[in-house]
Structures are given as C-alpha cells and as structure tokens.
Length: 320
Ligand SMILES: NC(=O)c1ccc[n+]([C@@H]2O[C@H](COP(=O)([O-])OP(=O)(O)OC[C@H]3O[C@@H](n4cnc5c(N)ncnc54)[C@H](O)[C@@H]3O)[C@@H](O)[C@H]2O)c1
Image 1 (cartoon, helix red, strand yellow):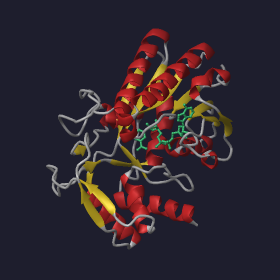
Image 2 (tube, rainbow, N blue to C red):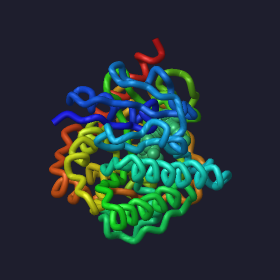
Image 3 (cartoon, rainbow, N blue to C red):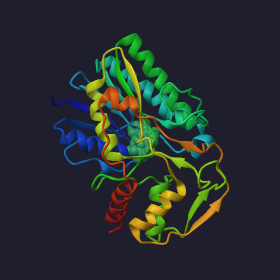
Image 4 (tube, rainbow, N blue to C red):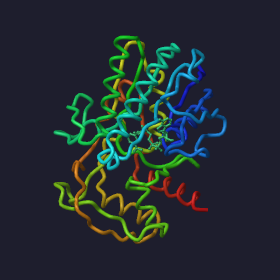
C-alpha cells in the first residue's frame, strides 16, 4: 500500500537514494533538509522539497504522514571529536525535536539511521546487536543517545521504530551517489586518486592485527541499504523498537579495496602509509542475521568490485 513519508536529510547521500526507492515503490515523499551538507540537486525528481531544519519539523509534520525516515545528522567522526557540542545539538537535539513533532502530529512510524560507531571497539566480530555499545567518539555517542531516546518513545508513547545500524555504505544508485565535503570515506577517496584529483591514497596504519596489516571493514551497497529501509517501514510495530545491523558480513581490508579500485579503474593508485588514526578499530564486520530474519532483507549487491564499479560510474558522471 502506498503511503506518504517525510525523509529528513533526503538531499544527502543515503537519504536521496532511499527517497528515490520510496518514489519507485509508489510512495509520496517530502524531503526536509537544511542543505548543511546536502545538495538541492540530490533531491530526487518527484519528491516535494522543504528547505528547513529538523528542529522545526513541527511546522511541516501533520497526521497525513504515514511515517518518517530520519537521515538528517552530522556524521564526520573527526569533526565530532573537535566539536562535540555541534553533534549533540544537531544529532541529539534535532532528533528530540523531531520525535516531539511526530508525537504531536500523531505520526507513529520511524526508521532511523544509526551506525556501527555505536559499538566502538568490538570485543567480538561479527558484531551482533546485543554486543556492548561503547562508542569511541561523540558522533557514535550521539547516535547511541538517539537510539535510547527512540526506545523510550516506543515504550512510553507507542512509537513503532526501527534503527538500522549501517556499516560502511558505498556505491551509487544512478545519479545518486556519495559527495561528502570534505570526503572521509575510503572508496570515494580512492576514486579521487583515479580521477587525478588527489596524488595518492593514505593508508592509516599497516600494523593492525589483520591479514595484511590494514583495517578491515564491511561494505554495503547503498541500494541494498535502501531496500532494507522499505522493509523496515513494514516491520515497524507500535510500541516496539527494533535494532538491526546492516552489513554483508564480509570484511575487506583497506589494501583489498585499493586493489579492487585499481582493477575497476585501470589506474595504478599510489598509496602512502600514514600513522594510525585514534579510535579506528582493526576489524568492523556485521552480523546481519537480524535484518535477514526480522526484516526479510536479502542483499544482492555484496560483490566489492560491483560496489566500486557503481561508485566509479557515478564519480565519472559527476566529473563530466
Ligand atoms: N554514509 C555512511 O557510511 C553512514 C554510515 C553509518 C551511518 N550513517 C548515517 O546515515 C545518515 C545519512 O548519511 P549520509 O552519508 O547520507 O550523510 P549526508 O551528509 O550526505 O546527509 C545528511 C543530510 O542531512 C542534512 N541535515 C543535517 N542536519 C540537518 C538538520 N538539522 N535539519 C535538516 N537537514 C539536516 C544534510 O544537509 C544532508 O543532506 C546520517 O544520519 C549518518 O549518520 C551513514
């Protein structure tokens, strides 16, 4: 059945791809974004656009909405360490205002972008949802605080919510792809080297306890991620807060990613080893069993070369 959804942060990377999927599934989409890190042209054609802040969500939310997909946040780990107050104000303060506006308007369904950063340094991999949460930076702490806030809202006021804890999102969906500024994610950074926009890729530490000494991460295609959001909307039950990891359960090292970009682009990609960054766990790999079981999610784009190829196509399209 088609519905009407508010997509906060729908001018950003993940929000724009999910908004596009909602439209393709026949839903009505209103994007609320203050364009602090997003782009007006990222809002998919067919969606209504409101330029505004989630802290004022009450101005636009009313009972005609069937739910909210909440992507709007700041998400630069390094910046969150330097300016924690910025992250508490936007990610926590903004989400609190949004939950209040939803309560007021009687909108009782929410899908929230949480993150693997809520777990911090994992004691065991793959990481399951019941693993201890001990974020190592204010970004992860702000997202964990929102998860707690949502649990309280579900228990006290009947919200039906799903928090999706993304691992490393990558790839593109047609003309909707990653364009963070500054870019901090590995795949788009390596692609910038292939495009001649950067001389070399920095490898932060090659002495981790991993097979090739570089950090291992779980990369998930943004279109697989988008499909999980649509399933989460159907899975949300009043009074329940479900938390699911989203990853493929496969780890790739930084060197494996660079090698894959070399194969896909045909560029030699020079690399420079730099010191480790504080707070970077050696291995982050998801157990995605809960998403498969509870959402019926079945990702189909787990192949790293395919993820890189889609990101490369988008990067070239943008450059032309
Ligand atoms: N990209 C990843 O790998 C990844 C991993 C884990 C979690 N996440 C989470 O997913 C979400 C989307 O990430 P992204 O990579 O698309 O980031 P992004 O920066 O591209 O998108 C965020 C969007 O939110 C908007 N925004 C920020 N604060 C706002 C506010 N107060 N009011 C209205 N709009 C606001 C920005 O303008 C931007 O368009 C974020 O919540 C992020 O924490 C992303």
